[in-house]
Length: 406
Image (cartoon, rainbow, N blue to C red; front, top):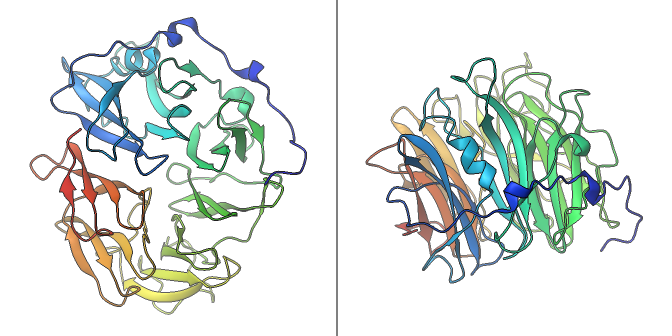
């Protein structure tokens, strides 16, 4: 637990409460075609799903909650300004689907919504500017308030959030100093403090900055980066701060989340980013041409070693794009990964530590959340219309999946 002093406190004064944002959206009839984009389950019974839907050709958002493990759902208010901003753009036009909007709840009362939204452009109202926003609630969504990002030094927006014990963490970067930061607060307030005590970098180019937190007991790991590689990594220390860590020792691998089997056993799916030619001596033979491998650590992340080759090229690769929650290891020996094929993405499952694989879903997956060893949820494309999404549930550690009615 936290024993050291809190450093560089960023007090509640940095939170600007806009009165209009306290006004909740009145509960309306459930839209007929919700498209889930983000799931958050702070407990096996209690969860939230953030969805988008078409409202008179515009884009609207919907937040719903369950307290019975997804058997039933009820409407929850969302920030007033969020829906006002989404309605500035037509549904899924200009390649903009706002799928990076994310909901994260620490418990049934304390939650956040973050991501990129449009705002009016006075010079050209036809094409609104895209900006990063963060809102919080501490009464289960009855009221929301906006948190300014500039004072938190994350002008590039929030890239990831996670809760561990009484603390909630967020990660983001800045476009002014090429730095990135982990911040922490007690989950029942927004008293954010910088907790990454060592310098963390942001990507110099490539795709959008991404991050991922993983926990097992009192241990915690964090990695960040993009398609060009890992740019930051940290371990959770005993005083509650995040200290520099070597991270996955896989040169020239694009960013990938860490799957935690136990406090000692960690897995990553590494895919050649193609920027180091010839490959470094630390990668396995056949690392060129987008090859993807499973790497394993048996010492809590001190070292990672090649474990199993997944593919020899980008086609058929298992790490085409990072998916929140993948790789998933709900029970030791079971691994779930997404694979890219010529006909589309597939969710693959192994019950033999990666020796044998089988296809369990022939759909593209955007998030996986396991709430227990057996029960998990996934946001996937609908087979009838790949531009829309739905939520599936598994009760057997990812073997069989069924639709969830939201």
